[in-house]
Image (cartoon, one colour):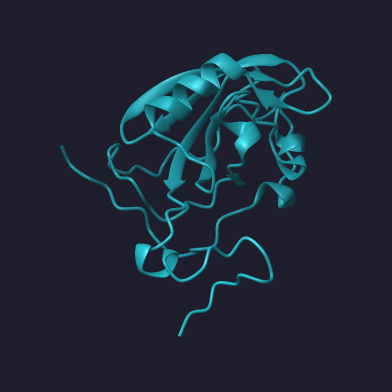
Length: 167
């Protein structure tokens, strides 16, 4: 298999807040960029993206992942299947675009979160790589929120009275 490395002419990706999409005239973003499907991290390709820092409500027990407001204009206003790709594996999730706050279907989001051992404090970056009026595909990067154990024993960082101090 020949691996094509994305060119880094413009390393700054396009955030969804700067993107306007006409779904009737556009059915797929630039598909010329390829990367190894098993890579855990890669440079952003210039396609629209958004990120979410995971909180308790987005995981156990509710699994309610409401998508950021800045991402909502690029998402459809209907219920559609979405494919999340992470490390070469795909998960089909239903996007509830027909509700006031667009969100992923809790049972299918739960499967993705459980399969990838997501925890409070982790961040997920969703890069929109393909879209049409009936289907969206996101590449996902997961940035673990694990705090270095060397610092954990010093303070917990949860309040101003117990700050995290880095020497």
